[in-house]
Amino acid sequence: MDKPKVVLGVSGGIAAYKACELLRRLTESGHDVRVVPTDSALHFVGAATWSALSGNPVSTEVWDDVHEVPHVRIGQQADLVVVAPATADMLAKAAHGLADDLLTNTLLTARCPVVFAPAMHTEMWEHPATQENVATLRRRGAVVIEPAVGRLTGVDTGKGRLPEPAEIFEVCRRVLARGVTEPDLKGRHVVVSAGGTREPLDPVRFLGNRSSGKQGYALARTAAARGARVTLIAANTGLPDPAGVDVVQVGTAVQLREAVLKAAPEADAVVMAAAVADFRPATYAAGKIKKRDGQEPEPIVLVRNPDILAEISTDRVRPGQVIVGFAAETDDVLANGRKKLERKGCDLLVVNEVGERKTFGSEENEAVVLGADGSETPVPHGPKEALAETVWDLVTRRLG
Ligand SMILES: Cc1cc2nc3c(=O)[nH]c(=O)nc-3n(C[C@H](O)[C@H](O)[C@H](O)COP(=O)(O)O)c2cc1C
Image 1: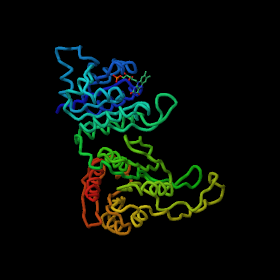
Image 2: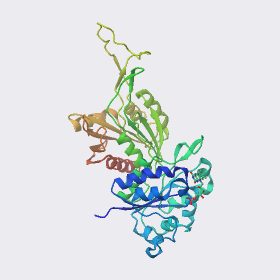
Image 3: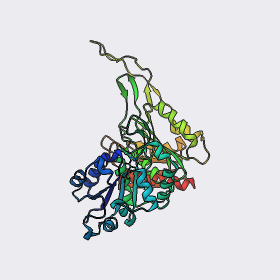
Image 4: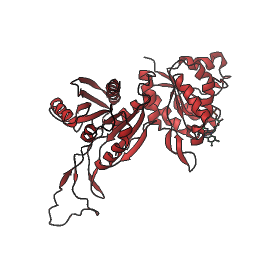
């Protein structure tokens, strides 16, 4: 089978160097990538780098290899065009249909999905001209990833940073697999928790669990791709922030509860995918607990942590809100899941079997989504993203 053809457009932003990693990810995962930089982009990263990494020729303008009509062919043959970074200038040109170099010509001839990953200073991003250009491109069906918040070119920080290449890659992979899907969560705010809480014993030790956060991140990423405003409450994941998602970092179950209670009143749906510790050590030693010669260690006394899922399901802070829980079970998976669903009072419960080498940290999952209405939706073994899509399908149906 032919490799999917991806055009990587690179415009002249300081983040152009990050597109090298995106290029690597695309080529290493079996895509045939043609890099089309702008002249400005070549001030940041040279043509030799793009050509060597992609294995394809590189040019910026329509006058090279004219016999091959590259200004038309490259766009026509593409399965996906991704522009990363997309400058304010490139967004403006694309929105207005300008065609004064090879990349802008390619954008006009492409009939495949197009993804823009803008990166610029906050002022440029927030300018009404840029915002209108972004709205125009989105209305025409392009995927424009929200820039991340963080360090910009100099010492300043703010919104406008290029999302991590791994996250842009995930968006590309999703768009290639599914095309540009209807933004059926547009106008909705969803809260997703992910990762595993850590309950400290002393300044260096904690009680934790094996949750990697990958399922929660897949939920956040897919909700953003379906148009939702997403707040991701992340506990100890070490994963890059998903593109276009507001991330709140927490450590313990008590901190996770605070963050959920703060975000939930505004949310249309809350999905609790984080593995929240049921118990925490009753006491916290301010200094490292020492080993003493000839003495047995003190037993660790545990106290219960708050049950966040039950709390938000019982005291619904917003009418019509859909609440989804996760149950990680090692045995009697479905029976225990049904009991948990009743006990917690949530609308949906994703039940999956876990173990040392099962689910945790893996890229794949298999589950049954139980509904409070008695429904059962099996999700076969597959990428965590597929399970995430099913969860959002079920949530959207309940949101009406
Ligand atoms: C050091 C430097 C960094 C720049 N970074 C950005 C940027 O991150 N985003 C942006 O929109 N423009 C940035 N610019 C301005 C663009 O390079 C300029 O608008 C250029 O005309 C864009 O051309 P292009 O869209 O054809 O690539 C930067 C310019 C310089 C000199």
